[in-house]
Length: 473
Ligand code: UDX
Ligand code: ADP
Image (tube, helix red, strand yellow):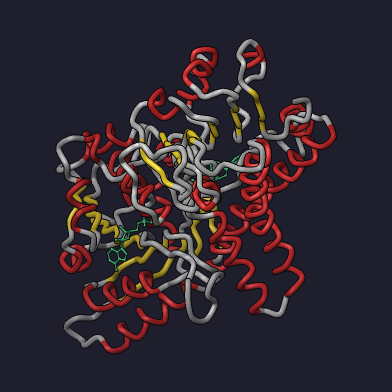
């Protein structure tokens, strides 16, 4: 038996809620989907007639929005009405790491999830399946269930309400979200009531092969999500640790990665060294694991995972320090061109981007940064760096660090002492480095923290070159 789902309400119109609902709407035209959010500005952008203004940039997202918006996909701030009418509610709100109080710096702040659960408890009618979609610590479903059960018990006979809670973690990676949603490696559904599980499976069954839809108990589903991200992050830290060793020993990390990745037990993905992992999930999920492990008295387990995050921070500092050292130990008053601010290519997201810490280190050293990113706005960079943009060009002698945003790569590079590539955008791979070097102040440096530029392309130029993990330079 399955419950018939005709109306879905998704609470939270962010990086997860927006793309996920766009794909479900596209694949299930018989379901009406209402995506709601407290943030009016965000909803306005989701409804913008210019699809370039969507609040989330994802390849292929605009095409889906164009196809479904106003038909079976709607964006609004009408939280109450849409909860009331929904057969199924997805909770896709933000769960950042707590910055104060119990568990500060490690545990996720669940106030938004709790707020949602309370709204659902207050407004839902009849039977509702509640699906947790945000990345959440293990046992969050229990908290949601307790709030909903309390509402269920106190509901009177005219307004009899009941709930099922499912965990259905998202595995979409930003930049490839639509592809990941349309062709997932697996869909994970954790829960107790098989009818509720089947109802959600039926929705995914419209485009995902049955053998890729995995059913587990609710806690396994929650923990599997954290574990998947922890394993991926650990691979990035592992290869970055080897990159540092390559630089000292004359090895090249790309060659090492290739050789190691051909072992089918290891596999070739997530072995690119770089400035460190960023994004909203990896650090947060590992810190959740650390928090839970400590909570259950498993200190060694907690320490094991915490090292992965600590190493990631070390890697960022390692890069900013080696750049300062190569530039004669001082970058005060020097112009440094930063290419890329997003935490990875093909997204406008800067959450936990290594560029933030690296740029802060440079500003602290008194550098003048000219930052380029094809998708990140100067407003976002201002928020992340916590320093106002200096629109007029700083004199080289000014010792206070400053930054400005440049729309064009050539403007960002002009007169720079050094270029630092922090995000692997395709357009940086295609630059004519001979031409670039003529725009810079001599002696000029190129620091490729993503390892995307081949040294053959630099050999003919008069650029000094450093590339992550390349000990032959
Ligand atoms: C991740 C998970 O992949 C996804 O399944 C989950 O649901 C959300 O978190 P995301 O954070 O969007 O997705 O990006 P991902 O592609 O996993 O990259 C994370 C970070 O690792 C980025 O900063 C990226 O640059 C870095 N990375 C990734 C590397 O440095 N090297 C690699 O080889 C791969
Ligand atoms: P994610 O990457 O997990 O999607 P985002 O921060 O991009 O996270 O999006 C989460 C969205 O959830 C935000 O737009 C925020 O305004 C919204 N939100 C948070 N709490 C609530 C709530 N109680 N009701 C509706 N929307 C909420």
